[in-house]
Image 1 (cartoon, rainbow, N blue to C red):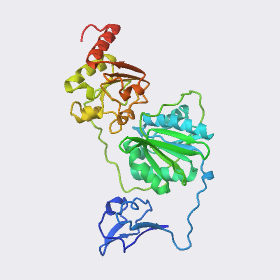
Image 2: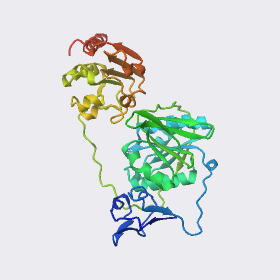
Image 3: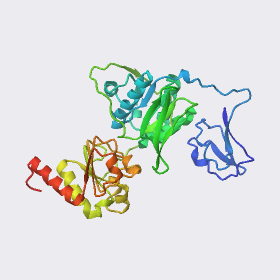
Image 4: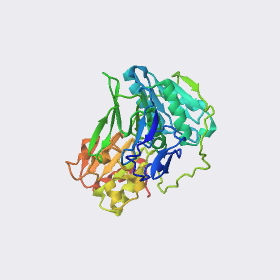
Length: 401
């Protein structure tokens, strides 16, 4: 199997040049040419506007038949930061455990650049086994190394489902893994279900600007791969005495053309991380303006929470984008979510509907937000929120602002 350019179709537009991470495409005599550096990553196949780049079988070569029966198990990529698994890793372990139990199979996790103590924690949260590489060169994310290791592990172990977080890291290298394996990938899923009859993974995500929820399947190829939004899945049950297997893997003699010299953390003026907040007070168009957010900040302060916003409020310039919750903002899952003056468009609901308790405050009794709310208050938020703030202060014994 190799990649070939149909020179009769190629116009020399050079659209394909930047798609290749290996500099395997060059322009010769006004046409694209695939040179000896091609690694069959297949990233170039869909970028040509003329459809001139194709995957071609060599003479006598037959297409490899994929037997779906050869693939069993659920595999989760457990992302780490500074050597410690991040929250989405535990959320995926919970989701993967549920899927594995429905399929009657096992759950494995892949942890790169961490230690055995972290691997054991993943087992206690639900994994049956953890493939661990402790090499410190993996502590900092590198596309090439991560892609190579995960691709080879999937080829060897043949899981039927592979999950990863829809984080900057997951979005960066998981598509490359799927391309190498020649399988499909559904990005940014908000729900996962199993069709037990044919063991198909139903990958559910917003589509057409959030106006519909699309259910996507991968019927002909394995593994079935999906990235999942952080904070939309629940952690599983933690068991101190849960037993599992830690399997050490190494880098072999893998080489990379890139090296991470340094990482710079973003400095934010948001006092409380929305992803970590237990209480979020969010405002929408009904807040009326930047001054309206003052009462929300006060309520969030006495509750020890953070302030969020809908896209409508951010687009109006009433509050910075870093507070935006929804399809084009952050996905959150606090214990308490208080929606003030938010109508409840599907784009916003996608980002907060998994919250434990949702309290909606809105003048319009027909607002869609009440359909997902645990408790609903119909009325003026500028009357209700100050009363709620005053009552909480009394209960906490706060006498001074």
